[in-house]
Image (cartoon, rainbow, N blue to C red):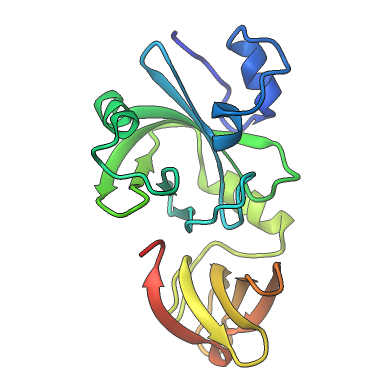
Length: 207
């Protein structure tokens, strides 16, 4: 296929569909689930730090310049589609922080690590495309930092005495004065809280 996309450029699913020669109205199925394969190349659309289009949130997150991403619900390493992705070893990754945003092209990622969880977890590394500046720019737009601190990490499950259980999306630098941006499932919204006010729970990503 020889697909070429511009690093850090914003794309809609329709934009990518048109570039693939499928027209601008391709939708449903592989477009909603976020993974498309053709002629040996894969395209992945993913949300980071929030629920995807079909409501799943497995803890996709940036770890430095690498992306920790989880496959479809109930997936395992013996799934034929997972095996094909493993054989390919690479995928074009498009990501965003919110369902209201366009997807940003991170680059043609290479598989750096695979976890035998359900769903299957992949760590994608990028030789080009995604940059610290790009990540910080996206974080600034949401009023949050991407540098973890204290004993907490992005992706941790935490409990707040008044807000309930949530997942850490970001942590500002600092120690006792660090602030964590947390998505509280019960509220279905993000809140920024002090790390001293939350308790770390068991579990990091899917169990």
